[in-house]
Image (cartoon, rainbow over all chains, first blue to last red; front, side, top):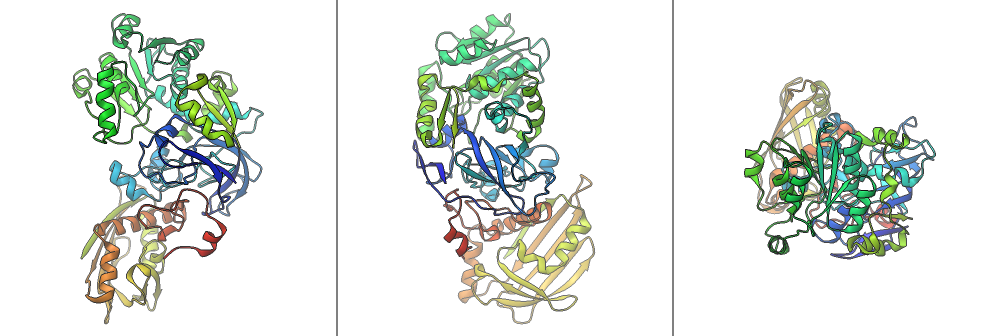
Length: 391
Length: 180
């Protein structure tokens, strides 16, 4: 089959690889009809996530049709021919983490748990196409994928919704939603979201759906801010204004009640010398993150507020504003999304037209043009917000 | 060499105890074991796999057991690698899970076998037993050892990095099976 693979730092390559087969009894094979490029795929390509190998099949946002099931799959749960969206964390459904609906912390789905444990203190779940640290599972930017624990994760789509309407249930819609949910939003809340990429846009929409009084979008790309503005959110361009001052103006001097970091470890910064400091330290691996968005969110949030982190971090960061966090009673909440927890309720919100995930799609390309898709997305060319690939 | 490891398994104590007490189950999750065969109520014959080198076998007997609490065994006769093991089972505070604590003691000999065993345990001997218990947890909680494309061979997938790429296996790789 054809698959998009990691081919070294700053390089992806579509090549022929073997078709997947059933390896565990509860596997299914899915013929992929739509798949997407995620912002976190850029962290892999940019070389900030260790344990990637030449030839790793990328991609963790995908859906399609079940073409084969393992002998351990109950036919009442999943059959050949079912149309499914596959959540990015692989979860067994049986361990204590899964029982607590902490699916991205599944204790059984990562065969390389011993390595993950060294890095993170405790292991994390397996993830499709997301380094060997999270299991070494082939991803979904391909014609077919093997889906382990297929009786736990995949969501059956039984209505006539299009792929584009439901594809993002695999990751970015639940991720954005969880970012907003962790904020415990009240009707009087002003919510500020750092990053107007796909996850940020969905965090904004989710904050609105959860009842926020006002939602603010912080980014530097005019087209991304316009996209947020068209959806009813208030744009702030950090290259044009001082973010903290602007947030104070927009909140009567209080600061946002809730702040969401939808940027993560490769933030850019309006202040050149701070950007240079972190870029240099990151380049020589003295820190693994460039955490400007997180720092700014913590310093901007009103006292007693919540800072919710859904942007990806992988290692260690410097200059964490612990004083602001501690002295001003801030709550810091975070997590890789527990996608399985949110798929059904969010599908219902899509069916009720409360959320329209299609609004962020700017490019649809054949799988064979994945390389161009990565270029467009990474360099923010051609007003690229989200690339969907068709195998 | 004394190794200890512990894990929590979301199954009741009697089930976890019974699985371990059937010593023939040990090779499903312990990487260095090829086979354990019961030869009497408390006696068994153990065959080590590739990690310990070839043709390493010994007899063992259970010297102490308390159902639902602990099992203690030791090798008997002139074992190549004399060893003893203790496993304890305790109900976890959550009321549904079992805490499993394992202590293995190996008397590592000189010669080829000793070298192979020392190499197997390497610089971080506890890692092997930790991984064994992780697989025990997978087997009891999910039914089998979990496989990925990078680590496709279940308990044989103990090779350190780099692994094979995370892409599906070719027909010849599938036919060849685990690289021992």
